[in-house]
Length: 214
Image (cartoon, rainbow, N blue to C red; front, side):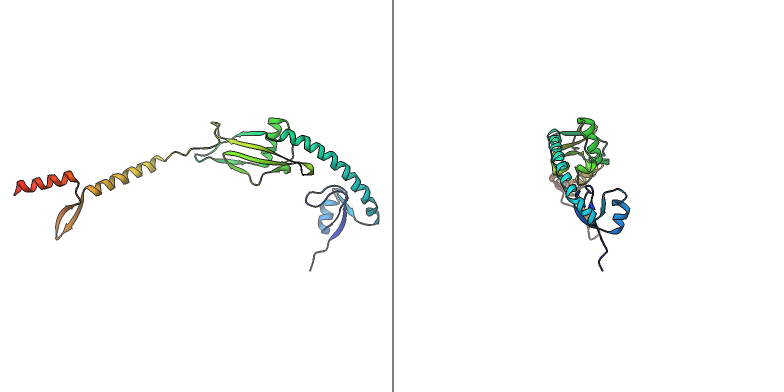
């Protein structure tokens, strides 16, 4: 069974729903709890439909103004670099993250350009050092791109991970053990211990000792 819906005329733009002057269908609860209190929509009755043409014309004029303003702002934004210094662990992972709100703040603080958080097209918060292209979607779908530069306190955008001292020590012990096993390997045959796989120097000494004793 389909949910009941109300037919409304939008009195202003509503993100992810429609533009001023459009007729939309929404659930009664959404209309009652959000659209009506914010004066964003009204029931699409005969009176509302008579208003529609006027609202559409007003929206068209405003769209032209918004586009011009967005294009001017996009020219100022395009190619800018936004730098931020963060604390990271030894692998370059941030203690925290850089969010869309942080990007908006950096743009305002470093270049005196104000944008809204929802205009920052950041798929997910940044959690590692590096350079990240970030798209700014302004009104009327005008776009500009900036570069987000995430650095550690030394000004680096990448961390070269040094080998762990413990790992190096393990490698050295393993190599030493392998060399020892290659040079001297003891095996027990019929209750008598003999040396097998002796190194060249040790083998010669063993032969010399045998001749002397005989």
